[in-house]
Amino acid sequence: MYSHQQKQTQNGVDIAMTPTSSSTIMTIPSSFPTQSTQSNKMKIHKTIPLKDMELFLFTIPSKEKTLMLTDLDENTTKIDLEKAFSVFGLIYDIVVYKNKNSKQILGLIKYCLENSAISALNHHNSIEKIKINGKECSSVVLSSFKSDKPYEIPFPKSLQIINHLLGFNQWSTEIDRFEHEYTREILLETDLNGIPLQTPIRKYESKWYALVYCTFKQIDVKISTVSHGVGEDSCKIEATKNSKKVAVSNARKLAFTKIGILIINGQSPIPCILDQDSISDNSNKFNSDCNQYMFDNNLIQDNDEQHQDEQQDEFEENEIHDNDMEFDISINNIDDNQDELQVDVDVDVDVDADASVDIDVDISIP
Image (cartoon, rainbow, N blue to C red; front, side, top):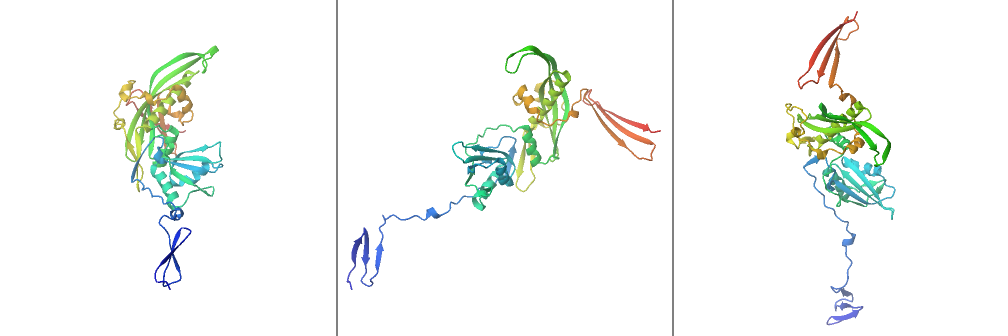
């Protein structure tokens, strides 16, 4: 039996031996390296709260609405990403960047709403990893390098978004009238590359203004926009039609810069008018004075760009009438046993703002 403690040193560690036991107690110095247990813990992501209210503007989504995916498989396509991420909200665009030096690629998911991006991110970090073609995404984060410049959304995409958020039957556009500025004959002596032509080409150039109304049934509000268009063609009539077509399309595009859509959790989206001056009171008189309708030429594309873009836009040919006359015919009281057919004809002649004629015609069938 030992009457006092004895210490021995083995490999730099003090061993204390007690007199009451033959066992040894190892005293580890504080400077001795220990293995951390934190490396075995899973990284905890903080859930991002959803916004109670969000105002959508018809501009390209900012970085707060954009998710960045890294280390994607080289065979990943836009369709694969759309299938995996469209369940969280309406996607504006998907971009896939391929790296020539490696097999891994980078993806960007641009949502129309910020809450959609937040929902996808929270689901991936806190509920279940999002899978693409059965393989988990290794990294899903909010984009940090996306430009926040408020570029306008192209017109076809604006139509898709407003129909998705409001419903295609909750809004409409109508052409009120056109105003002619000029139609002239031009002589083209060079091609698009500036090379002189052997035989000059004669064309007609026409410029028209269009007044368009946009109505939102949910809030019972109508706004008005005016824009111009320039059209060219070897045929004078076709040049006029092209000009009117571009003018109407530009006016419709302009309407989307004056509105937004308010999304409140648990409620239906509500259209909002950003430019109160554009609200129509049905008292405006259309004339060729551009300043009266606050034309903004910066919002109108160059003529060459107009011709390229407007080919994709839908346009009803019956909305344009060379004589500015519209007919609405309805037939009533149709019966095989009747000897008389009553036809109601409504004629709308564009002579002045209030010119209209209602004609009732009785047609007797012998």
